[in-house]
Image (tube, each protein chain N blue to C red):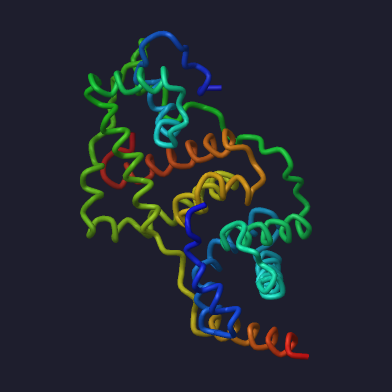
Length: 90
Length: 199
C-alpha cells in the first residue's frame, strides 16, 4: 500500500508528500507527521503547487452543479407530491 | 451539529409547499441517480430506486426529527433502497486501485520530483476558466471508480461533511479519506491535462 510507505521519524520526500495531501487537508495527520509535512512544503519548490492543485480541484468540484430538473421532471415531482398529499389526506 | 442547509425547505415541504419539494428534488436528483447507479445493474432500475427513495422521503418527512441533516437522512434512505434493490454486498469497501497517485517515473530514486507538476492552480481561480472546465470535471467525476465517485460527489460536489458521508455510506473515516484521496488525485490529473501534460 503506497500510503504506508511513509516512515515516521525522518523527513518527508515529494513522493510521500503527494500521498499525504488529503490527510493533511482533512486535518487527519498526527501532529508530528503534520509538522514534517509542513517542513517539507516550506522548502520544496514543487510540492506547494501540488497542494494548491488539490485545493483547486476541491474548489472546482464544489462549483459544479448537477443538472437542473427539466420542466418535465419538475412536473413529475410536483405530481408525486400531490399524490402524496392526497394519500395523507385520506 | 452545524445548521442543516435544507432546514427551511424541509419546513416548507411539511407545510404543503410543492415548489419546495421540487426544489429539493432539483438539488439532489442528479447525485441520487449517480449513487444509485453504483448499486443496481441498470439506469432504469436506478431511476426506480431514486423514485422509491423520494416516496420514502415524503412518507417519512413528517416524522423526520432533524437529528441528522436532511441530506444525510435522504441519502441513507436512498442507499438502503439501493442495497435492497441491488445485488452487490457492500459491507466491506475494498479500495479499488492501490498504486501511487502520481506515476513513480515522476520522482528520482530518492523520491524527489524529477518531473514536477506543471503549475496551473492559480489559473483555476479565474472564474472564466472554471466555467469552461466545469463540464470536464463533471465528466471526470463520472469516470471515477464507483466508490471514489460516491465519496467525491457527496463531499466535494454536494458539500457533505466527512461524518455525514461516513454515515450515508456506512464506511469508516479512514476508508472515506483513502477514497477521497484517490478520487481527487485522479481529477487533478484530468484537469491538469487540460492545462498542460497532466503530471
